[in-house]
Image 1: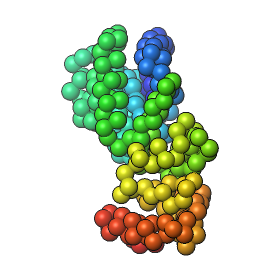
Image 2 (image 1 turned 45 degrees about the vertical axis):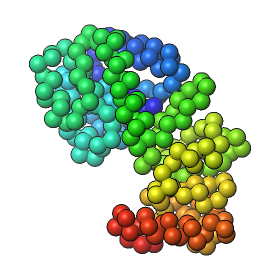
Image 3 (image 1 turned 120 degrees about the vertical axis):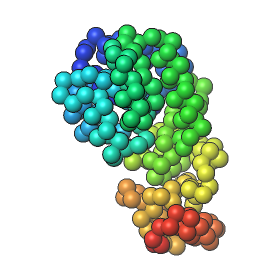
Image 4 (image 1 turned 135 degrees about the vertical axis):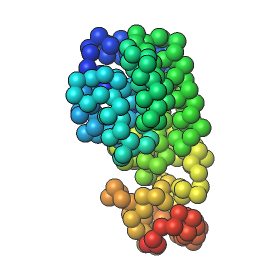
Length: 236
């Protein structure tokens, strides 16, 4: 899970970082944290985060203004506002904020908020991979290609590569077949990220390619045609 904190006071940053560490460590969930001291830094890459903890009052642009700019290009991130001023909570929901937490942040309320976000992610358009020691969540719209790597799998996304401790068959069962296709024993491709294809391989929009097994070719063509018709895309 990718998380950002946008806050200009170090004491509140340290407090939230400690609570986040405690939450995710207790639940054995991997997370990646980035901290930004102002909104301008965050807006340089607003698409990368599952959760953004946004301070309402900062030097320069306030949290509402920053969130408005983020929402112009990114409706996927879950925004949680944090502030010492509870009277501004209504403003936060203008930018589709998920929750408003008052400083100092109450541990129980923060943990409840994170539980609700995870529950929504698991029931929404996320691939959630659980193992004995960790849980990994990946937004399905960002998945380009899944590649077998022995007992593990490599998932190529719009943000990079994730190594998952599940085999490709297990991942296949969790992906909707109207959006993804197992075109080879070693590959699952996302229809949304196909650039072109031939009788032997699929080219993806990240430059990667995947083989198409001869036995899967007709089913692949039919499934892709159905996807194109459903989403009114230009045929390849």
